Length: 72
Image 1 (spheres, rainbow, N blue to C red):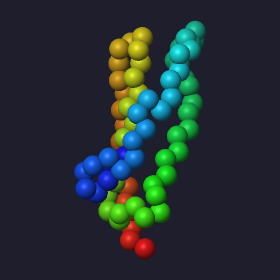
Image 2: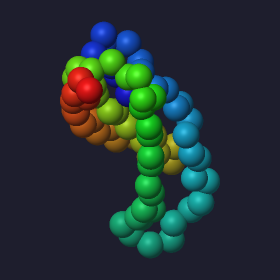
Image 3: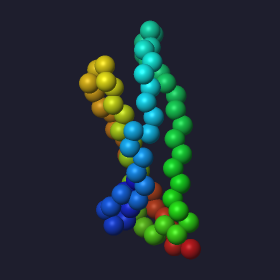
């Protein structure tokens, strides 16, 4: 997660590894991910970014979501 200052606000590299082989297509592995900002997080625009890496296909998939923390 990137904070309003452009620096990482929360980092969780290598959050989870899945080493299973899926015998059916398309492979679907539902996941939930929760990330919490501290209560004193600076207000401003943040970006939440997730990168998934498929070792077999040597491919990456990334998505990003912007959100705003408003002042109290």
